[in-house]
Image 1: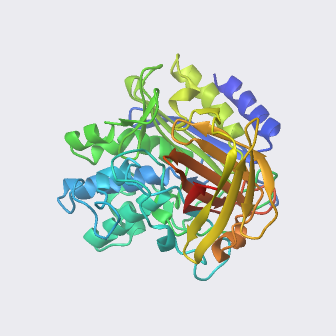
Image 2: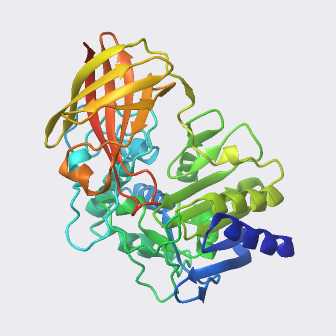
Length: 440
């Protein structure tokens, strides 16, 4: 198996243009495999080793969730008491936020310079649906959980994670913050086309600012239960369905109805492609950490390795797809309305054409035609290379998306400013704005 794994990983890195990957397997509480391939730093020709630390991106959510559960076990908070704050609906509870059912929208605000973040997360801290009613993966929700933890513990979240989770479990490589401050060598982050990233800052570190070796992530996946009460562990794995194959528990994705049970969490951002997997019936866990925005090498290695360790495994057990697409079926016609932003309303017109085409015009800009689709949640989904004219969007979100539902005499939903990948510049921000249109 090891010779085959060595050959497969080397081939996957070359095929997908990934600088390096680190792989680890734990059985029960012990590491039984650690391997690393490629270069942690291409410029310095620094080879990756099992001791190399990688960015975790959203695997950090599993640490934050464990910390919330630990605080709940110690009666510092109640997972079902609404968080402080005033919202359109009843404030979400920590349990709903842990399950991405708190009503907040998708969001990130990655930035690559020192000083205050130019995009304030609080401008987007608005519920888009009633808490508990639907799943939407949201960094804002985990940001709220980080704030709550700091309030009830009186500690910086990074300190709490180290003192109450990583040090008791012996995870000596763990770090928290925009840059790794520990003694271990660190994998340089690379764009999909191989350019080195600068330090990345965001307004939601509790959702993605962790660092560790693959070995420590594999061990974390297996040993979390040592810290929590049995009932809390059961609640962590009691996953509300996302789709027919997956549910999301308390910081864990749990597979259902296909192959062996898999508990997992992935992570992806500029220069990071990470995966943590636990296979409880085999008492095994797996970590695969890569330093590229492109997830293709990570995914290929995960499929290969977990397919060997857990026969019957399917990649559908990891991917939390929530939007099954279908043809857009709205009738031809014209619609006009506004996008609501922190800087004021922006006029928007769309014209639905034949054959699934939509013409879009923002404010006084030129019209752009693009192909539209639909899904079980939205009657119209479309994206185009257009710029929402806000200061936040102009920073690094040059693309435009619309997701709209037909509601009697109007189309309602959201307009999104985002950056489509990082083959041109760096990954930017993902900004959601309410939008309402009426028939002309």
